[in-house]
Amino acid sequence: MTQEFLLLVKKRAEQKLLFLPHAMRQMTRSNRMIKTSEVRKVVLEGEIIEDYPEDTRGHSCLILGCGETGRTLHVICSPKDEYLAIITAYIPNENQWSDDFKSRRMQ
Image 1 (tube, rainbow, N blue to C red):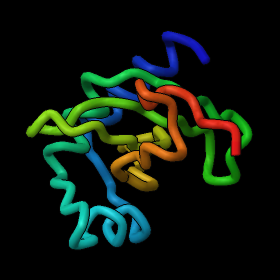
Image 2: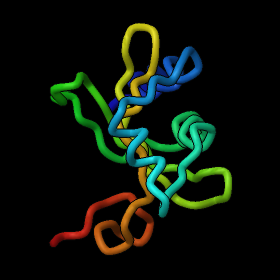
Image 3: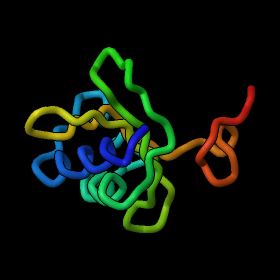
C-alpha cells in the first residue's frame, strides 16, 4: 500500500462518490443509518488499514475513520477514472476487530 494510492483515493473522492447498491443497502440498515457525508469524511480524513490490489472490482482498500458523531466506521472503496466507487460502509463489530478497529481478531 502506498501513499500514492491514498492520494488517488482522496482525489477521486473529491471528484465524485458513487455508492454501489451493496453500500446503499448496508448504509440504510436501521441499526446503522450511515450518511453519505459521513462516508465522505471517512474517506477524506481516515487511514487505509487494508489494501486489496487484486480485488476483482479493481484495486480497492478498507479505510478506518470517524463519522460525524464520532462513531467508528469502515469504508471499502475503489478509485476509478472519474470517481471513487464506494463498495460498502459499515460500523465494525467489536467482536471481529481489535480495540482500535485496525486489525481483525483471530476467530
